[in-house]
Every structure is written in C-alpha cells, then in structure tokens.
Length: 204
Image (cartoon, rainbow, N blue to C red; front, top):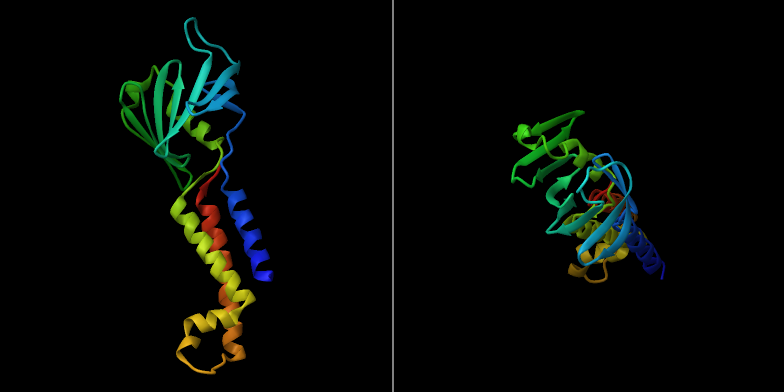
C-alpha cells in the first residue's frame, strides 16, 4: 500500500511539472496581446497594448506543429524551432536565423541584413522565455522508470534483490548491508529520475 501511495504521488509530481501552460498574455515586437480563443487552429491573441501602422493586423496567432512553434504576425508566418537558449527562426522571406546562448554569450548566425523589415531575433528569444513548459517524451519516460525503480528499492529492497539475484538461489536471503546499499541506490535512482523529469521540461 505504501509503495502505491508513493508512486501515485510521484506520478502526480511528474504530470504537474511537465504540464504545458498556454499564457493568457504574450508580448511580441513591442505589443501586448491577450488570449482570445484556443482551438485546433491555434491560439488567437488580440492586441491589448502597443502601436501598429495602418493596414496591420491587430491579432497574433500561435500554432504548434512537429515540435515547432508557428507565429502568424501581421499576416506573415514565422517558424521557430528550439528553445530560448538555442533556436532558429525561418522568416517569411525564407531566411533562417539562428541564436545560441552559451556561457553568457549570445551568438547569432545568418544574414541578418535580410530581416531588417521583420521583427529582430531577440523578439523571438523573449517570446520563448515567456512560454509554458515543453517536454521531451524520451527523458520523461526514462525519469518515470528511474523514479519507480527507486521507490521499489527504498520501500522493498528484498524485491529488488530477488529480481536481481535471489531468483537464482533457493531459500537464500540478502544481508543487511546489501539491503542498505539497495536502499541507498533507490534514493539515488529517485533523485536521478526527478532530475530527468525536470530536464525533460524546457520551461521558461
């Protein structure tokens, strides 16, 4: 019963930490937008604050497809791939600009002279920094497995010993030292699982 309770609490922690939250307000290119609708066509934001020129759109549309974020701003499409520290943007004129933040230094790659009529790359970094968490499914699964194995090792080290070695012997019992080491390993496994869990989420 104790094992089940701990596992349930752990799974709740996992699901909570990696839930994606759609922000109700976003800022982009000097304007502030408020969420108007959210459906299969994407999230529609309406301008709340800022200035636009005549003929420009008051709305901002955000979509997600194949782990990419698509921003439709002023009737033009911008495709973002990556996270705030390492991402690229394909501009409406098919120019791709990349940005990498490493050891306190931002490196921008691409012909920035060809995007002077579009939002600068820094606007997309700021945008990504304020988005909800996105997760890596493989790391999430690995974290869940490590966490569950760690819990079993802590609560029932005899079970871990049996699955590892005990099934090979008849009427054999593990030593207290072995059980203690298994519990320590379980604690390490739980910690590693939680680390993988949170690293699977690229949060703001």
